[in-house]
Length: 124
Image 1 (cartoon, one colour):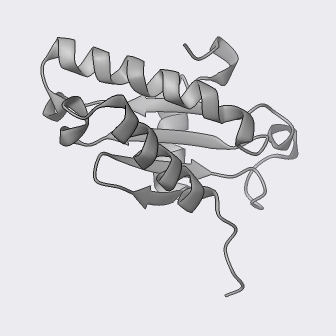
Image 2 (spheres, rainbow, N blue to C red; image 1 turned 120 degrees about the vertical axis):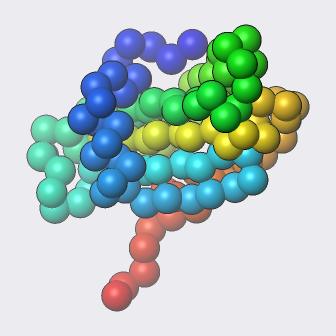
């Protein structure tokens, strides 16, 4: 379970991360990451712990499937938040196939998407 301080809680937080963050997609999920090192993020949030939120829509399945998928993703995220930079905010959106996927496959896709979304951008 993610601690209270490690969760995104407001609709505005979710919207901002999805709108302004970097996206990395895999077959089972999509990760949106907004790093605190950007100019538009207040300096106080650059030292805050990383926070994460989940989006598991009805396309994933019925209530039982959605909640089971969310629990598995929260468990996987909790283990990986320590490696996320301070102040970063993440939104993990489950794809419809995530409801039937084994936890090992979710872990592989989550690791790949996190690595891609958190990779430093090259010079433009």
